[in-house]
Amino acid sequence: MTEKEYAKDLLSIGAVFLRPEQPFTWASGIKSPIYCDNRLTLSAPEVRNHIEEGLAAMVSEKFPDAEMLMGTSTAGIAHAAITATLLDMPMGYVRSSAKDHGRANRIEGKMTPGTKVVVIEDLISTGGSCIEVVDALREAGAEVLGIVSIFTYGMKKGLDRIAEAKTVNYSLSNLDALVDVAVEENYIVPEWKERIIAFRNNPADESWIK
Image (cartoon, rainbow, N blue to C red):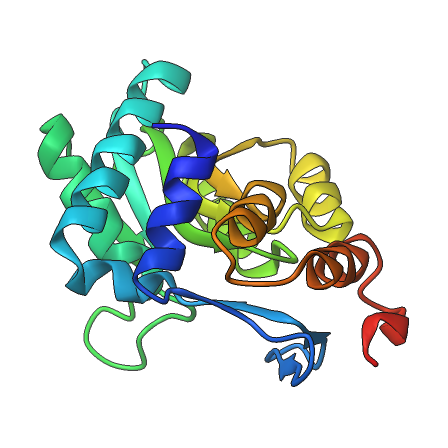
């Protein structure tokens, strides 16, 4: 499947909300004309199958030496589990913080130092949470080969963070493909596409909000 076909899937199940007229506020405080909820793919079997097969193919193509998949908590866990099943690989996940009970684990699943790991993420925006996972795995001795994700906004901050962490991300789809499909399929008018891209290119400049 192509980037635009994955984008069409996400739009078809309402996993992406495009709302320049009523911006969303992300947890970071950024005002955004778009909100992507890839958790909704889990309850849409046909789309879910496309995504998991795509993630599995991307892991095999880009990281043929991978020995284990690690999901980001919480959104990447299910996708890592299904993709690992398709590839017959071990998987685990990384908590946002260590447990305050039991063995106080942050990394769940048996991973020995030196294991070649691919991180499975649902969404890349500013890249902060994903890089925290990469750092935690490296601290535990993993060799992180890279990241495979469902969707990326392609924001400069996220791209810079990934580069600074000396890793790489491959996504099934991205914002450019999505807004093209959204216009073609009449989800949005062309002017909204321009405003959404303007936001992505410079989130700090809120002139796209009218």
